[in-house]
Image 1 (cartoon, one colour):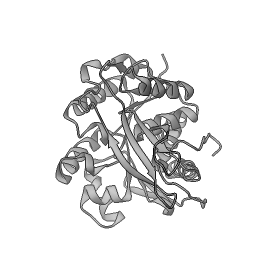
Image 2 (cartoon, one colour):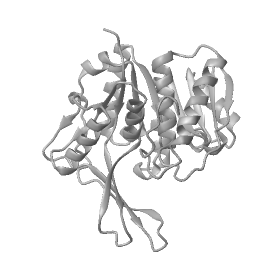
Image 3 (cartoon, one colour):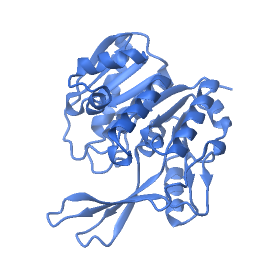
Image 4 (spheres, rainbow, N blue to C red):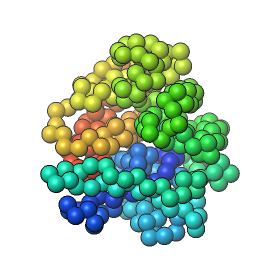
Length: 306
């Protein structure tokens, strides 16, 4: 059986966006980096699987309905009667600007366990993707380790996007040590420029890349916002500038970039030369830039022609 599709392992979020200045009524939207990624790959036409733990209440039903609309397979996820979906509340201030107000996680220990993973999905898929959001919690860290074993056994291409959120970690040192330990497991690694500096203790792009060279990451990508992005393959760097757009909201731009990269790897294979890696970068930059032109990480329905 030909392996097709991308698996994303994570935790589903719902962003509750206030619809007026009273901050009493909200519009629910799917959220979270691993969710943004799997939606992005699905919109680009790749079979998509999401692995998480879901509840049975109205919020979980909303999440599943949204996944269904996006043609994302959640049949390998697990349901729990006590699970409550994490919520992020975004309010509007007197000037009409949105701002983060509250993060609510009523059931922090109700997560997908390693014994709830099903190897079958890894045998079906071509790429396995994960981020640091499953590494700060000991239970989900073990789940991630099991998933990596399944992915390697199945011959999946393994992709890692740091997406560091330091407030989730007990300390910066713990975050740096844990994330660094997982870098060698991935063939594709994406870091934002500030994440590169944080993990390597450097203050320049070249110095950071040099520090990461000890892990011999086959395909390393560094995003630099409006400046563009670079890739490192076989010790050689390729840079691609970002297209000029009217950026309104950069939320989810990195996830859109990664979705586009995984599309290229899925459809065109592992790049073997600098010209091909530059082609991948150019497309990822276009999709990432397109995601900034409207408010919300999933507002722009980009496609293969973005």
